[in-house]
Image (cartoon, rainbow, N blue to C red; front, side, top):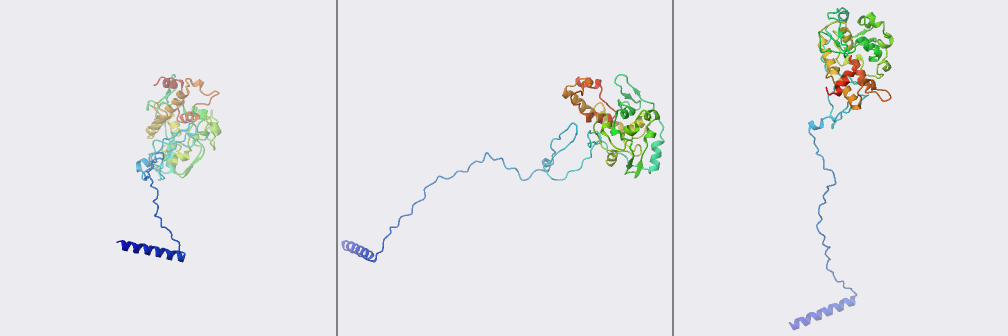
Length: 328
């Protein structure tokens, strides 16, 4: 072993001398350094971010309408949905006040079953079969023996005198359903003692709707043409709709359309009518206890609702307000 070790050292010495002679530099091969050890990173909780929304929404939730808003004078009812899916169009109701917001609870009116000459003859050939209504001295409501629950407190003449329908209810009109023009029928509907006390050109048959002619000075309701297009007019009985029916009913005519029209009145301004109750609630909300105190320097309590109720032959009385304050 000593000989082998001596020979190995001799070889190393000789090889080193040869390297030095050739000018070759020797580099020591450093061992690779290990990367510094880093602790395993923890996943950060993103609690501050909003929770992810599901990609699918049930049709029931998506189609649920938002809570409607109510603008007192414009009276616009609107709703928004969470989907762009087209929704079924809803007909408006003439019970709702506003420039273009009237809808009717009953759209199942009969369609014309006869030609125009026959219908026209029917409109003008009726005879009164019921007595004139009586009027209560206490609350000034009218009472009709054939329909005891129908208790308007404005006569047709009072309505026209005070201002309704922009003064244009009996204006000339064209019925698309009947394909005929109707004009001057006020001469047959309104007795001479009524028309002689009215400015017909401004309060009855004006060709243009004028809000200034209304008692409360606001535009309210849709046109007769729009009522007809929505199917609210029973042409067999009255080509112009509810007020024309009321004029003839007040004068003693009775017909098959009476129950429908009285029902519409009750839903609007009867004891539990929606717009009667809404108007009274607005008085309570403003703290107004006397009809005479309403208005003045302050804005009046919903002129649109007042005008709408007047279109349905009802105007608020002190007794109505007193009972509302009592919780009746």
